[in-house]
Image (cartoon, rainbow, N blue to C red; front, side):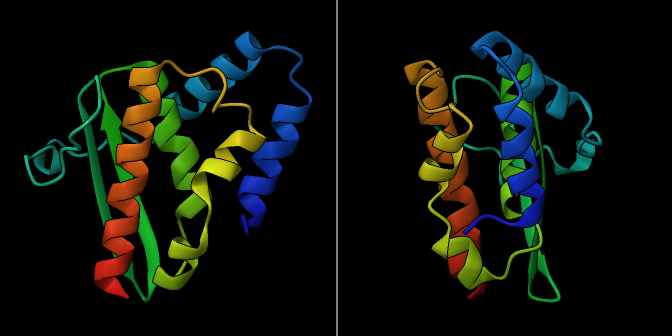
Length: 136
């Protein structure tokens, strides 16, 4: 149940031959994000369970999810960018209906992230889902 922007990202990944190219593409996605305001890098937005420092600021505007994030690790910033593509613009019910693990698997990410990065990704997904559940 991915949105059009995520489908386009999946298509981009299909053209990348190996994992290193995909890894670089994820990092590039993170570099392209606007920086998260320092005022939003507070304990309330910090995501526990990540090996690196991660902040997610998620909110619903006009019943649509909008979230931004930041990390001190380039690959994690890229994962935040990918999650933004997956979730931004969805209603709370749509967010909860997304099988993020399956969608990330379509990018080949499930098989190539370290255990720590996979745990951090699960924590970020859970934070987004908690925000949607509270808003729904």
